[in-house]
Image 1 (cartoon, rainbow, N blue to C red):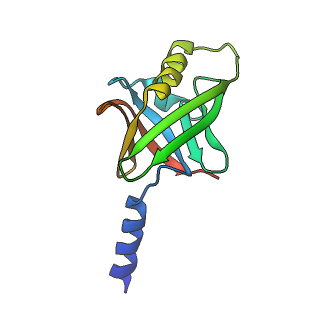
Image 2 (cartoon, rainbow, N blue to C red):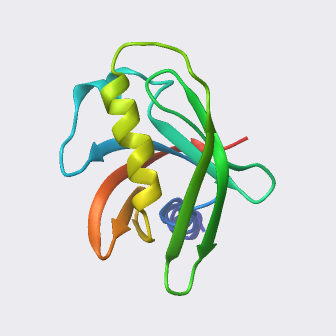
Length: 132
């Protein structure tokens, strides 16, 4: 019985979903940056049917809509609004948000989300928590 419970728990952990998961940026355009990990409340987004696309760059919140199709893993992110506060690392924030407009599909392996543009990985994010 214990082995069965362990197997079910491991199987559930492997089933990370695109929606209702907080995705934290770990790599942008093939490069990781220590700031992505150092700033726990920055460089992330969530997708939900109720609230759409919501995230934070270096310090500014962004929001918009998205269209996702699980069968061909198609994804279009439309960050339409963003707050306008000045902060450090605005260049990384600008690149992060700009990259979201380039996404046309995605892949999830374990807890890693790869955002793709014409089959090329343009960003990698890690699931940090279920969105609430």
